[in-house]
Length: 249
Image 1 (spheres, one colour):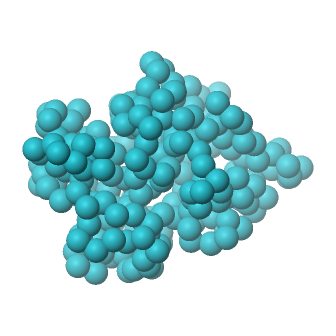
Image 2 (cartoon, helix red, strand yellow):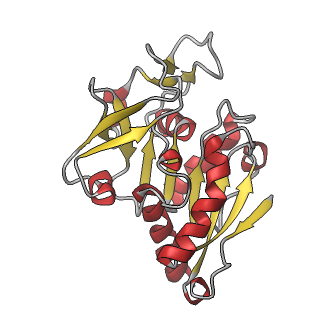
């Protein structure tokens, strides 16, 4: 594990400190990864939300209890992950243990995959990026790649996503080539809620009612600025993490 800390501000030190697990195979070539330290610093300086952030590679995330004890889990872009099993294990722990959770881009895709396998019982379902020859694919190549794309997302009124974004429409940035294509009704029937769609009605946001904070988006909130202004989703995760830390203290 490598540690990033955002405690440079004397004001920030007065706030509770929360430990957050960043799940992903860290790379300087993934823009979202390079933004994270800047976002952590901005959260501390602007919002007094202090996060001790630990990068956990997906291979390490596969270890038992890898993310237990953290106040939040954030599954970041950068798929294909080196360990699909590790990404899914981190998602499952956060979901089952009620740990504040955010997943973006590849994290969104794997959140749906984890839910389909472990909640819906679709054990043979697969992600085309990891297993392109599988017979039953939940995540498949998008008809039109969203790499570098910006588009409007319509948010369901009364959802967690709406409360976080403060609006029912938002313009967001993408950098992905895969998305969900099947079994969405089954995921809905088992409790997962889809609360954001693109201009064509395709699912772009998911959340889990009854969980303290569980939000996933196909778009990348990390790309909303140069890192100096945290996206509302990132800020909301930090707030949920600090609350969790306070309860656990």
